[in-house]
Image (cartoon, rainbow, N blue to C red; front, side, top):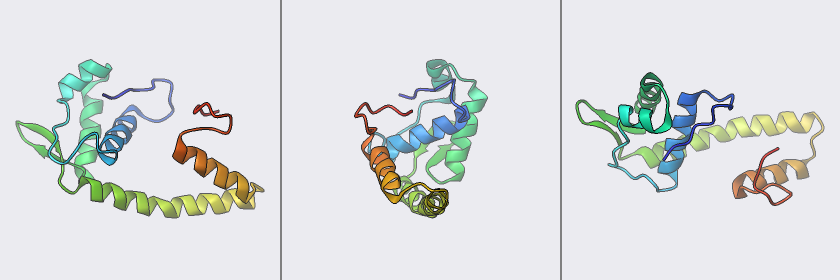
Length: 131
């Protein structure tokens, strides 16, 4: 289900959050679906249970999952809307970054190409790999 990149600079709990959000946003997980138990996921992806609990708590705080004591965590009914809202709010960050990059001499065409590659999942060489 989830894959952790131990070499990534992104903290493990954030990788878990990002991947669960992606599963929900793409429809692979839907409202009411139960997330794996903390212990079960810990064994599956070889991550400390406290790290998984931290990710689940953050998702709960964001309103993306609902924690039911004694039963586990479930995708909330309004998770897709919450994710769309967070994505829309992130556009202002993208705007500021694009403006900054342009002021540093990055051409608009390069910015467009990079966004197109990010959305399509393919790089200019067609491999789909970064870097």
